[in-house]
Image (cartoon, rainbow, N blue to C red):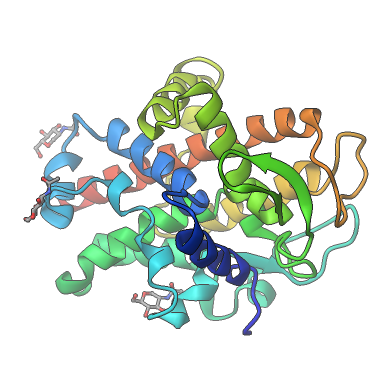
Length: 294
Ligand SMILES: *[C@@H]1O[C@H](CO)[C@@H](O)[C@H](O)[C@H]1NC(C)=O
Ligand SMILES: *[C@@H]1O[C@H](CO)[C@@H](O)[C@H](O)[C@H]1NC(C)=O
Ligand SMILES: *[C@@H]1O[C@H](CO)[C@@H](O)[C@H](O)[C@H]1NC(C)=O
């Protein structure tokens, strides 16, 4: 499948890199760094520290969180691993069927399992670095609702233009991009000085407040098996159907939609919860791997 929903984001990255001084793009950039940063922080005083150092040297999970997006050109086989396109959705029902939507495990839920098991088993120690860099990234992607959404619009990539001013990056995007980076970039620049660590610190604080009662339930107790990652993919599908695809009045979003304030407010809540879940689950996977190996 040549045209998948990851493709336009890649083109945008190239255009922006060529034309803007220092754009940051994507759950492709800030979102992935936030997930990495949360996991780095959650793991900072446990036995995972030396495990991470052994594989990453002086880099952090945050530092390596975007590598997987940079290799989609040289490693085109990895492209389908960034998302799930659900083949058959009606207006009110969209169910991820792995046998249909994730053939040979070549989708983001399959990739989360694959790189979890590879990291656990260190199948080939020369690839441990790549395996972990893939793992961080895919934990991010599986939590972006529009990375696990309708095939018919390529996860919101074909819904465009959507009108929304994003700090330093323009005002016309696809719906997919609003969720990949638009809302995140605006919140980060308006409230956190454009700084990933500050925004990350705020998300960490939510784990002790808004999300306190839920955090334990987010963790997976069957690391490396399909139950968890397939469930996380379906969670994204459900959130995409309930929030991403519907405007503030509950109508399906079409081309030429102008993003409303209420839409930003409700989407932001979902995005922050998904970033937090990504960070918590990544840290939990790594902790479990370290436990099993010791
Ligand atoms: C770290 O590992 C040591 C030795 O394997 C163990 O005794 C200790 O409980 C571990 N600490 C944590 C926080 O898991
Ligand atoms: C990390 O280590 C590499 C070589 O091992 C070195 O070139 C680089 O400057 C170091 N980076 C930081 C941020 O310390
Ligand atoms: C699993 O990882 C290997 C090594 O990167 C890769 O060749 C394979 O395509 C991956 N499969 C999935 C489902 O992620």
